[in-house]
Image 1 (cartoon, rainbow over the protein chains, first blue to last red):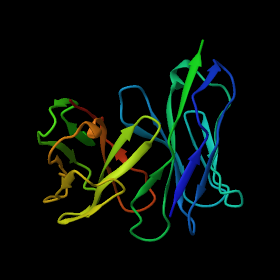
Image 2 (spheres, chains in turn green, red; image 1 turned 135 degrees about the horizontal axis):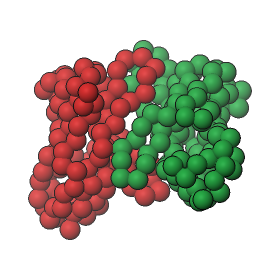
Image 3 (cartoon, chains in turn yellow, cyan; image 1 turned 90 degrees about the horizontal axis):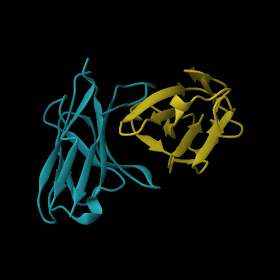
Image 4 (cartoon, helix red, strand yellow; image 1 turned 90 degrees about the vertical axis):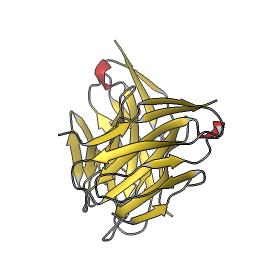
Length: 114
Length: 112
């Protein structure tokens, strides 16, 4: 079945540091890929997505590129802020019509210190 | 635009009690689902529905029931609460296509 593996946390960075959170997946065909963010005490919010190979999703300074050859969707940001402290989840949705279900990684907690 | 609304936000139950977690969405999404979130486990799918009158089990369905009488509502019922059901529960809805899911704010449930 489908699965998502993301780097274990927690990750602690200083403000303005470069962020990478690794995510790899196992799925048949061409799934859609997502990054979600969860701020403390809140639900998950969609951060960015990519629906086909070589697509780059971007939002709020975060980027991730859909790499079919390495089955990866790593999240990057060039300069993190304290407000980026949150838990980040990589997820995929299977290919094909009617594929509604999302499969999530276990999440990576990011803490950014001033 | 309310999106996905979950109630209650917090609940404490005694072992053996039953209760219903409410979830409503106003986006006319076909797909709705319930997840539980536990430390180190990520989100695990409990039940889901692809439309009114249609429900199915996810990864961890035992101890939970769902129904989908309308497009908008997808309640989750705990039949006889157990301490192992202490968790944060999230409801989500999703339209057709590649768009991601929309999540509610969560219900933090403690079973003592």
